[in-house]
Length: 427
Ligand SMILES: Nc1ncnc2c1ncn2[C@@H]1O[C@H](COP(=O)(O)OP(=O)(O)OP(=O)(O)O)[C@@H](O)[C@H]1O
Ligand SMILES: [Mg+2]
Image (cartoon, rainbow, N blue to C red; front, side):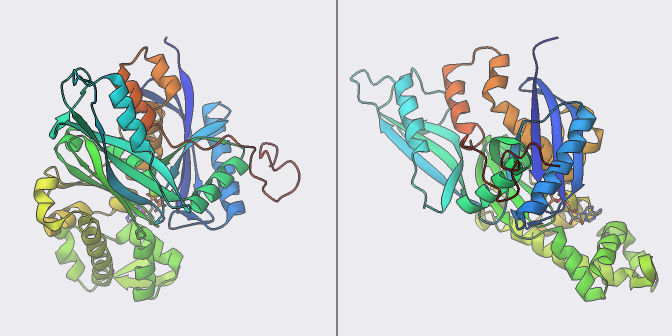
């Protein structure tokens, strides 16, 4: 058997924290060894609101993942989300000054380095600078311009930024749980990696991970990401709507949603019957009332997702349509409803491309966790070394795409009792 490395991903979501440990033989062979999923505490709309609660929950999730995988977790790829995330497309250009006008490796290096040199305000930090496409003398779609003639080389990139403070809080929780951060990866990119096919990315697709506190969005065209966004809405708001509109305690509203909410057309007749749904603790609600509340909120979320695309280009921009994932996409009939509203193909996507003990991860809720591993290993220096020498261009591209690094400073001072500062010895 070939050489393998062990890698871990931690998705700190609004409702659950999921740790996945896998062994990796090469960039496409990821075998899950163990998982640890616990209820999340201290996260609101994808952001940390209580360091100690989040730290404790991460530690618990890691402990379970360590037991089930038999591996000690020292470091992990970590997902970042929340409405502090910003994104934009950028463009850099270099002129080919030599008299022969032949593009050489140094020109490529120069334009890639200049792409990474962007000013962001002091409260923001760069999370990703993703190369999208090259053009040479105005001719777009160049895959590898080295060795071609031209006088001007352009590079388009997609840039993702995050609020420094939100990232620091998240890193503090992870390090406080005794784990170093291998890289920070924006959730939308991670989920896309798990649920989209190369064909969809090439033709054009919009991916929306509708979780609990956030909806993470990514639009792909011609094989690369062209837009990303985070909406601060998700299943949590849906549960709240049910709770407020139908007069149910939140926990009962959550049960009603998961058990009985259904947007499928063929149950319309049944919904019209004046039958109540018997719900825990003696609470009763009508089918039709539940349907109306759920439909209204989900219609709004679907339209908000679609608004991330320029209206005029809608269909031509994403001919393969929309892929929904995240826990809320489990809602029966949601894809069909979205398809009817948007007049484009819509499917629900679950993670793929992993082996081993991954059965429980083949569900939309785990798109970010699995995608974190896939994005991480596909851009991980050590994994790339396992695959042997890469071309000059792919090595350069890898340098840009790899997960955002966190400085290896001494662990944050947690302000707690002694021994917590390295986070490893606390129970
Ligand atoms: N069958 C179902 N029908 C409707 N909603 C569901 C169903 N199953 C799960 N959900 C909802 O999915 C949400 C959790 O999804 P997910 O696990 O993707 O969120 P998260 O990653 O923890 O949160 P976020 O990504 O927003 O930070 C919850 O709001 C939950 O109520
Ligand atoms: Mg999530």
